Structures are given as C-alpha cells and as structure tokens.
Image (cartoon, rainbow, N blue to C red; front, side, top):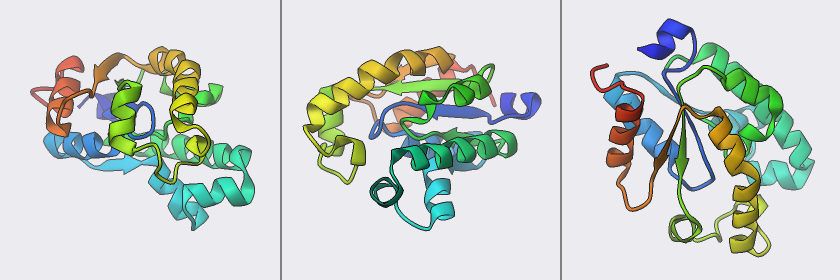
Length: 176
C-alpha cells in the first residue's frame, strides 16, 4: 500500500463538513484491509467534549490548535485511511504536512450539502445563515482542498461505495 511505503496514511480524505469523509473512509479502509481514523473523533476523545462545545467554551482558535495537533499525530502514526475535519486545511503547517501524501478532496455542491446536513445540524460554523455561510466557507477552502489533493472526487448522487470505488480508481489502489 502506498501509505506504508511512504510512511504516511494510505489515503487522506479532505473536504467540507457533511461530504461523507467518515462514511467513505470506513468503506475504503474495509476495501483496503486497513484501519480508519478521523481527526475530529480524535479531538473529541482528547478534549472530552463535542466539537460544538469546544467552539462555544474555548473558541475556534483553541479548536484549530487541537486540530493541528490531531492531524500531526495522525499523519505521523496512522497507516490506514485518514479523514480530516473540514477546516484542517486552513493551517499552513497542515497543508505542508500533506504534501506528497495520497490526498483526495471529496466535493459536493451547496444543494447536496443542504440535503446531507440539512444545514441545521450542530455545526458551529453554520449557525447563522447556513447556506450563505457554507458557500463562503467553500469559497475560502476550495483552493486549499485542491492545493493539497492529488485528486478530486465528487460525491454528488453517489453512494459511499461508489465514491470509495472512485477514490481507489483515481489513486490506482484497485489491486491493493
């Protein structure tokens, strides 16, 4: 597997909240016979509280620091499939860390985001005017997702299994 050869994760998934990084990542890990790790889950475990509570109690800067640490730890120690939180690519150090890794940007449009998340879930960055805020976040983050990604895979109108298959195709991991 490419991640084992390069000393990093086999696959890293980036993209906006609600795009399916966790679900697709779990399918990919199963297909590749490896483990799955999600940095948001790591942050919740470390902090002992949900991400929305971290935002409320300590603020976004504190959350971003926890996120930076979680990504560094996961990239250094995880050889399976890794999903990063939607805003992880905002950090320049994180983007540098992802250079050369098999990163795939999972993308979707705002209509799909509305369908998937309802844009009313407990997502702190979407609390006020969720559709407009989602568009703004994507305008800010899309260039960063594409900067770190080796490939882009749309999740629009696809099952998690079909998305996982597309990721395997684009990374040429079909026979892994």
